[in-house]
Image (cartoon, rainbow, N blue to C red; front, top):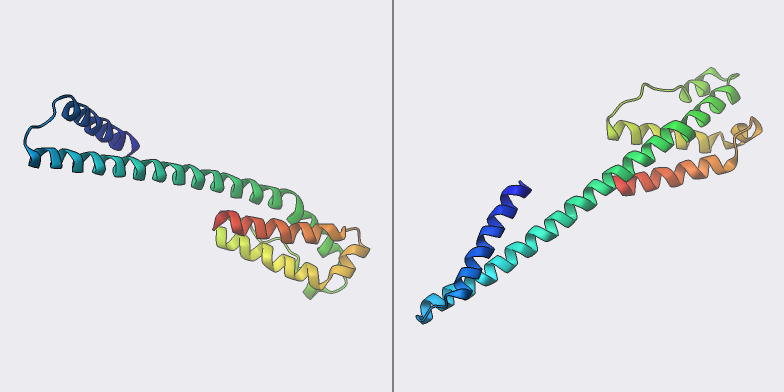
Length: 152
């Protein structure tokens, strides 16, 4: 798509150069040439803005993927393991810390992380007694909020 648009914009720029090199004597033709120049400038501006937005979207997607990998690799597993260990005497609560299968689905990941965060906050005392630093829950909350912001 970019190649096609850049070719068309380059072709229109060459037409504009030709029009400038060979000015019209007729006033109506000169008006058409002026309008063409304005339309070309607007099209070029839109193309540049779209390209900039596309690059920003790709960067945000990469940032979101990096955040998700960090959450899935470090915070979520440690909270899940310590939570299952800390609540082993209560099977119902321990099952809430069970690791569901990983999925590529964004909504499922956010729901899973948000549920785990809620459960971890509810059982924060038991988790900290069994070795989880309080900062892990805060880091998970901050990481999840940043992930949501990056993927919006």
